[in-house]
Amino acid sequence: MRSEKPVYWYQGLFLQPQHFQLSDRHNEYTLHRHFAVTHQHHWGVVSQEIREDALYENVFELTKAVCIFQDGTLAELPGNTVTRARSFKDVWTERDKPFQVYLGIRRWNGSSANVTEVDDVQNDNGVRTRYISSLSPENMHDMHSNGQPGEIKRLHLDCKIFWENELAEASDYTLLPIAQLVRDGSEILLNPEYAAPCLTHDASPSLMRIVKDIRDRVLAACNKLEQFKATSNITDGGDGAYMVFFLALRTVSRFAPEIQMLSNSCAMHPWEVYMRLRTFIGELSCFSAELSALGETIDGVSLLPEFEHTTPYPCFKAAHDVLARLLSGIAVGPEFLIRFTKAERYYTAEISPRAFNESHSYWLIVTTAMPAQEVNDAFQSVVKVSSTRGMTTILARAVQGIPVISHDGPPRGLPKAKATSYFKLDPEHPLWQSVESGASISLYWDQAPEDLSIQLGVLKG
Image (cartoon, rainbow, N blue to C red; front, side):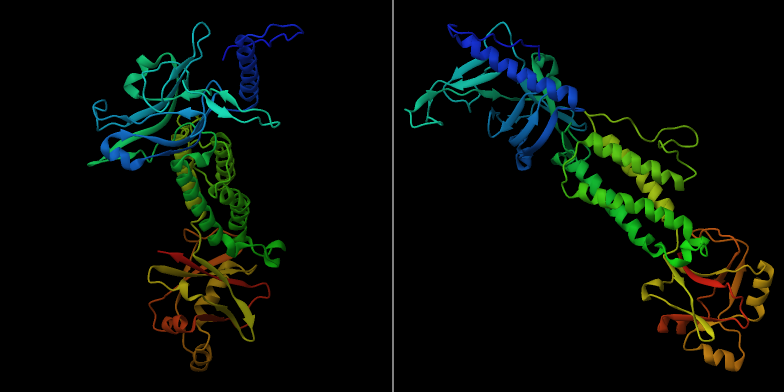
């Protein structure tokens, strides 16, 4: 919008329509300019409703809309705007490609008329001015006192639907992309992978779907990492195996309330949402050797594009994919991590029934200052493992118990910790059935070291 100087009002001025017209233009310019310089990407769709059933008839009809054009013009339907449905049957010739739809208003013309008076503003009168007005005025009451009603003619923005192949003919119009059509077999649909430039992320169903999917992944990661919440055993430095996952839980938990609010229609500009997603990616990258804080691979390839207001969907999709990758990486931990507690002569752990699955593997995580070789020797000769209710029988008969296999390092999914040994249990052994039925496991170690800490790790695969 061109800068408009304010009107000089003075006593004795003979009022002309131009005085009020110019005053309106100056007020509009001041407001529009304020938003342009103080708000990032200050134009786009606020909300809209499209008759999707009309698409089957090759007709595009906008029934409700609130949007701000690039020049700052506010258009509301219904409200200060009229628009009409259009058929795309004969103009969408390449049906195998997406078809872009625009909403346009005529640019302000400073040298000729900007208003056309018509009989019915709802009809397509072939008008090519910015505004239309009815020939018949409407009666309006005195809003400040009990004066006589007056006849008023109101202006309506004449918004028109344009297709992607009409851009050359629409050079006198300000165009706002609002939708993209795609063909799925015999059906015509709104492209689920397209987002119009919008002022709030909840104005776009496709962006909201991405945000909600990220929310589900974040909350799932939180639930999975909840078992690593700080305990006295962690804070006193006695449980290094937990630390990586505890830090991951802290990072994910910080973002969880925010993404929960964003998924519940807490309106925010897409640029700001994308910035917050990138901040979260930067934090999560601390747990990945493959991606940098800026979403770059070790080869220097950037997986995160700069924000593009006109086409925000690819930005959100890229952030979604990177977050899914990072969350999957930190979630490669145990399905369950259960601590053994000392109870009389045994170390015992209660196991959730959900931990038992044919595809799971079961590991004893043993932490002590005793040399690793001595720990391994003890597990081959002294230590016995069985169900809690079967331990008395195992000891009385002096039989082996459930076999354990020593491993040099942690399996994939368990953190590597100092002074820690890893032993794999054999769930195929007949004694394991008693562990499952009783949902409890015990370990006996005569003359166990005082600093002994034992956990049961349950992994997929």
